[in-house]
Every structure is written in C-alpha cells, then in structure tokens.
Amino acid sequence: MKKAVTKKPVGQITRGKTASNRLRRVDNFILLYEPALLTRTDNLFSDSLFIDLGYGFDPRTTLESAARFRKVNPNLKILGVEIDQERVEAALPFADEKTLFRLGGFNLPMQPGESVRLIRAFNVLRQYAEKDFSSAYQQLAQYVLPNGLMIEGTSNPFGSIWAANLARRLEAPTWKMEALIFSTNFKMNFDAEEFQTILPKNYIHRMVKGERIFNFFEAWKRACAETSHAKIFGDPQWFIAASQKLASYGFDVSIKNKWLAKGYLIWNNP
Image (tube, rainbow, N blue to C red; front, side):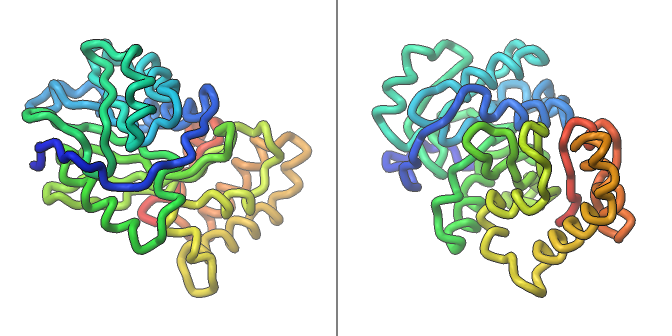
C-alpha cells in the first residue's frame, strides 16, 4: 500500500466555499449504513483514519464530522486534506493528536504506517473533466484498506439535497461501485429531476437515451407521476411511495423505511 508523502499535491484548487452542517446528512448516512466501519479495531483498522478530502476555506466540515463520528468511536483519527496551503495553515490551530490537517490532493499525504478506512470527497471532482474521474479514483484506492469505503459526490450549497457514489475498496487496489445515493431533507419541494443537476461526475454527462442513468431517471420521474396522489400527505410520503413504485419496475433500490423515511434513496449496483 502506498504510503509516501508526495511533495506536489495532485489535483486542482476548489472554490472552497461551504456552509455549516452542509455535509451533516452525508455523515448521518454513513453512521446508518455502516457504523462498524468507524469502530473497527481489527488489524490495520485499529489506527486507520477517516479522510475529509477537500474540506474548503475553513475546516468546519472536518471538525463537524469529528464531533459526529467520535460519538461512536472516541479514538477515531481524522485527517482533513486540502490542496491549498493557506487553507491548511488556517486549519492548523484546530488540530490535535487525533485531528490532523495536511496539504495534499488525490495523492493523499499519508505518513508511514498510516492507513485509511473511509474517504469523504464532496464537491471536489465536479469541477474536473470526466476523463479525470477514473484516474482520481484509482489513485485514492491505493490508500484505503480492503473493505473500506469512499463516499464521493455533490451537494447543493446547504446540503439539503445531494447525490453520491458509494465505492467499496476491493482486495486489489480498486473500487466496486456499491451504490448511488440520493438524499433530501425535504426542506425543498421534492422533485426527482433536481438530482440530475448534482449527479457525480461519472454520471452527469450521461443523461442521454441509452444510458442506465438516463433510464433510471425516466423511471423515477414516471414513478413520481404515478404516485403523485401521495403528495397530499407530504413530500416524505410521496418520496416513499415513488421509491417503492420505482422498485416495482425492477430497479434495485432499497425500500426499507429506515432509509426512505429519512430521505435516502439507495440504488444498489447502479
């Protein structure tokens, strides 16, 4: 597993703007989906890190995640990674022995002996060309322990809706795309079409006939139309009804209430 710190970060500087609790629902999703990933202490997992890649102009997302995740694992080490030196320097006053900030990019700035259990990369790859997507993923896979996860996607400015890839690191240094997640807190009027504008980079340019993602959204919008009567009970009930209808069309989406009632639509093996 690659460990050396590379001098020049690989990637581009992001806009860096964020808002408090923008990624709260991302963290809450991980806590629901696989809390054991945050608490594992077997073998190399015992001292492995959570990486907040591209935290922005200040470290609030990293610090907010630290507060949430340490409720289940008080000893969890967290590393905020930024490609901009000024942002790293601004974050250093908030560092401690378990909360770290380093200069880096897709070539993560890991020290010898360090390993990664989870990467969160939000609003990072969106600015890249689609051709750069695979190489970024391939590079990040080198640092993650087998069976670790990466959640990578895009949110709107306040995190009220987002869409993300959930990738599982295989035994070989590569990824299996485990799911595509859609999240809403129902503070905006529910509209499946809104998610098209915040799709991850590997999907956003593929909204054309013949592509799986296009077919998925056409089916989702049809499911919404056929269940529109549920709107009278509120957007959460409509979201649930539309998701269940989508599953009846043959799409592998989770219809468990623990997800749908909280505004998470999980498309497995997209």
